[in-house]
Image (cartoon, rainbow, N blue to C red):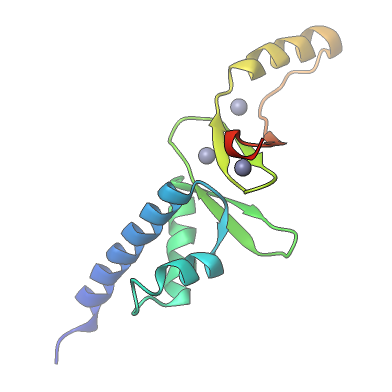
Amino acid sequence: MTSPKPGRVLYATAARRAILELLKREQRYLTAGSIYLLLKDANPKLALSTVYRTLELLESLGTVSGRSEASGESSYVHCSDEHHHHALCTVCGHVDDVDCAAMEQFKATLLAKQSFLLDEHSVEFYGRCADCR
Ligand SMILES: [Zn+2]
Ligand SMILES: [Zn+2]
Ligand SMILES: [Zn+2]
């Protein structure tokens, strides 16, 4: 009998790769359930619990970023290492990365006008992507 551990580790790596590739390709927020459905044909051995675990791991590494949907489910999108914001297409769900240069100006304005010192910020933009206009 072989030890189950190496196989499980190997499979976790394969699952991680498949999930990352999918998220990079899709560039939109996907729930664990929809990721599972999109991957299961090509990866018949994939378990939904593995998808959940992998997404939690990737989020803790900063490789994906999660948000809570109105349904209470979490959804995830692939993220680059650099600080950035998301512009979400309200038609197709496509996520574009937006750099943060404008925020420096906003920070200066807040400080000058309201004497408010901004430490952190979290901003999302909503609109329509190039394909949906
Ligand atoms: Zn991102
Ligand atoms: Zn769109
Ligand atoms: Zn920013």
